[in-house]
Image 1: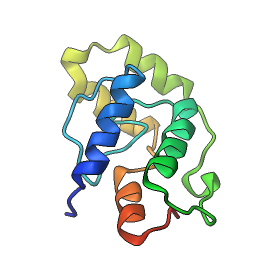
Image 2: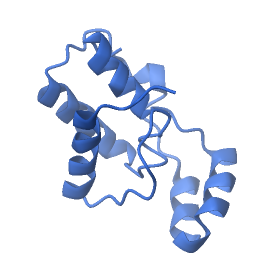
Image 3: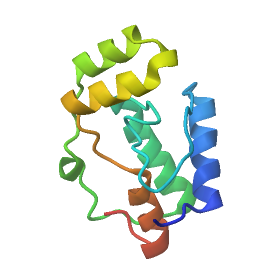
Length: 118
């Protein structure tokens, strides 16, 4: 498994802290931005924009359609609200059956490594 750079981890922690998102698990290459970090569809656009500006990454070939956005799964949001955080394993296993996360932290690490967001 690939390692995530410390600059990217710091960027994610800073973004989540500034936008009041709680990080409940370690950030690794396969961490989903929308599901594991809890960043909703509206803020993912802001996340990508901040990433591009901070790291000065070109993005001419980036397309949201590749990742299936924009789409808001209301059922997943409602279930995450009603299932308590003490049973996070239950909520995650159930939600993964009805909602397929789309974009991983690895996409941004690859952009840092390759110099382009695809």
